[in-house]
Image: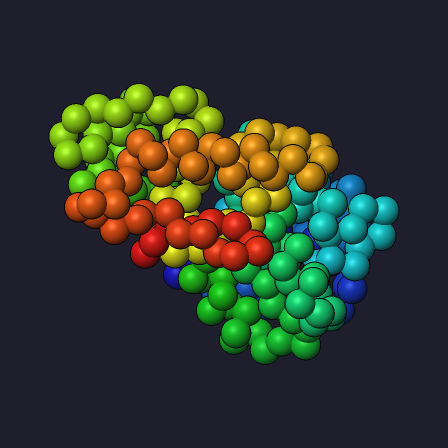
Length: 230
């Protein structure tokens, strides 16, 4: 049986009670809040293993709650599954760009929700237990020492180049938008300076890639951003 703590932030009490009952039947410890402000406060208090977050919330909406959690060092590692009655692609993309780990549209089956929760928790636990040294192709990336070896030889990266490489590698195969990279690494409160990302990607490519011998590691996704090849 599971023993993880789940925090539900949703203003529809009947949905909260339904989810709470089924999660408790699966062995989870469940807490809930009916608005964004209480949800953030409860996240600090309980330090849950996962947050189920509705978008349409009173006081502070789910997007803003997600943003506040992911920008706080104390809470940033908590995975978030967003719950919403909205199905527009814009909402889904925005939620994921803000750092949500998954997205499920109401109405949903409880069985599907539990399966999503288990998958995200399993993935998060695997990431936490991953080795501090990652080997990909001819690269060796030491996450603790902030060192990168290419063909066994150390290459010099700036702090931002290393953080960029680390973020791309840990999300291997997943497209990272320029705005997301900019906000996550540089912490800008505004958007529009995405050329900063492009310049750092170009410098990083020059250091880690060798077109003559090795395939390109960092792939440009036209009009969106970049991904590290899976």
